[in-house]
Length: 274
Image (tube, rainbow, N blue to C red; front, side, top):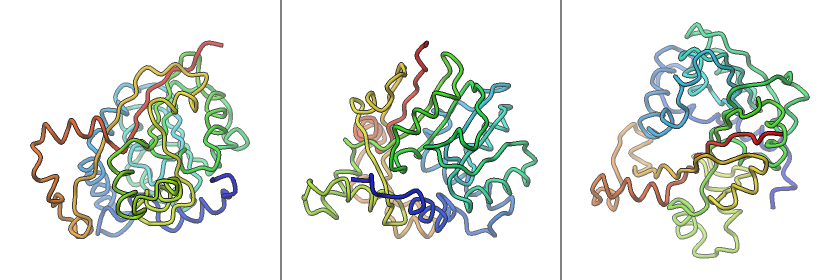
C-alpha cells in the first residue's frame, strides 16, 4: 500500500520533527541538550547499546543508514569506530553534524536516499552496516537491502531494527484507533507508529517475513525487544509513570512480555558468501 508514497513525503515528515528532537528541554544544539537526549533515549530503550555493541567496532568501519540526530552515531565514534552516517532528512543531519562538532568527533555525513545510496555515498567495504528503526519508513525497503549488500565486506555484519508486527503496540493500535478493523492495519500502523502521527510509510515484520526481506543474508540472531510502558501525558512532562496495568506486573514478567511482544525486532545478519 506504500508504493505510491514519495521520498519527498517521507523527507518532509522527518524534517518537520526529527526523531528524539524533543528528548530535552535544554537549548537545542548545546552539550547539555545532546547529553539529555542520549540519557532519555537509552533510559527508555536500554536494549540499544547491547544490540549495537559499540565497543565491538573499535578500529572498524561502520556505515549507519538513517542516523537521525546521531545518538548511536556518536557512540560508535566515541568507541573508536570509523563512522560514515547517512540520513534522508537535512534537519536531522544538521543536528547530527552539530553534535559531532560539539563532541569533537570525526564522522563523515551524507544526505542521501537509502534506496539509491550508491548514487551519493562512495561504494567501499564496511565491517558493519547499522540501521535502527529506519528502513521500514521508506517506500521500498527491499531496494535499501540491495544497496547495503554493496557496502558489506564478505561476511560483514548487518544489524537492523524494524518494527515487529506481532507486538503489543500493534495490538494497542488496532484496539485504540482501529476499533478492531484489522483490514486497515497497515494504514493504522503507519499513522500511529511514531510520536508525531501521520508517518507516510511504516512497514512491520515478523521473524518469518524478515527472512524474505533479508534474502542473501544469514540471520544469526533475531530478538524481540521493547514495550513502552509509560503514560504519555506524564512522559511529555519528563515524568516516568507507568500505565496502571504495567505497574501491576513484576519486572520479570514485564521483561518476558517484552521478549515476546516487543515493538522492536532486532536482527543481526551476515552477508552470505558470493
